[in-house]
Amino acid sequence: MPLHDRTFLLLGATGGIGQALIKPLLKTGVRLIVGLRDVGRETSATHLLERVRIDLAAPDLDQQLAAVSSQYPAIDGVIHCAGQNTFASIEATTMADIDQMLAVNLRSPMALSRHFVPRFRTMGRGTLMFVGSTFGSIGFPGYSVYSATKFGLRGFSEALRREVSDSSLEVLYLAPRATRTDMNTAEVDALNDALGNTTDAPEQVAAQILKALTHTRRRTYLGWPEKLFVHLNGVLPRLVDAALRKQLPIIRRFLDQRG
Image (cartoon, rainbow, N blue to C red; front, side, top):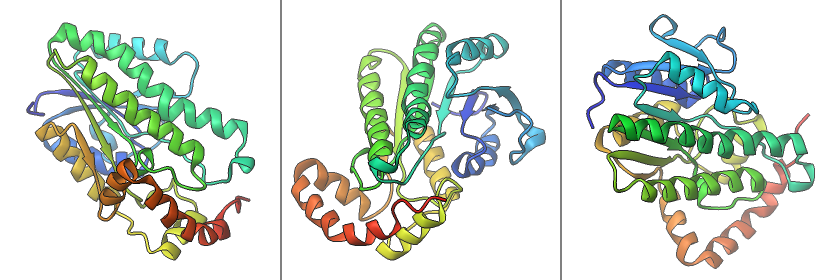
């Protein structure tokens, strides 16, 4: 579906990937509305954006979405690239951490879909783009809760795509590998360096999101050998178990160093 003259709601616009996505989207001719918890917070191309207040972790998210739809009834696309992440062992993960990751990474995509799917059906078109993670296919030590939410997002988007497959609605899922964003702590950056992991720039991920939107790519996994490990974990998980067991001493050096 061509992007020009469409109206997209972008969640996660203040994060690295969201920031990098704004200008490329605007160049396609999209009318872009960004949902922000703090509408006064600066984003790139500020003067070109329309802002609405959306707190993805709020109990009244459904009411906030209703207000946005009332203000912008032409919205026919949603890009969810917001996320919360904590790199910690399970015993060092607080209940607040768990609640925040569940709310932002999993509950909010479900709430968005519940709200917009019937509206898109009425409009006869609509796109839901969810940005997941390689850790939505490979459970990684130190990311047990984060992985669970991203596994859930991948499963939700897959089931939803099949649920609306008899309509013109599009449900797209894109899984980046490690990306250089402010969500990563110094310990995570050091861990990636120690493991020799390639880390993508947000602009690289944003370009792939735009490509997936333009060409209606239902599933996109980024990075090599990450895509290989995603496949192996699906068919021969013991191989991935063994590889991560070898890396565990390195991973433990960086775990639970939050101040």
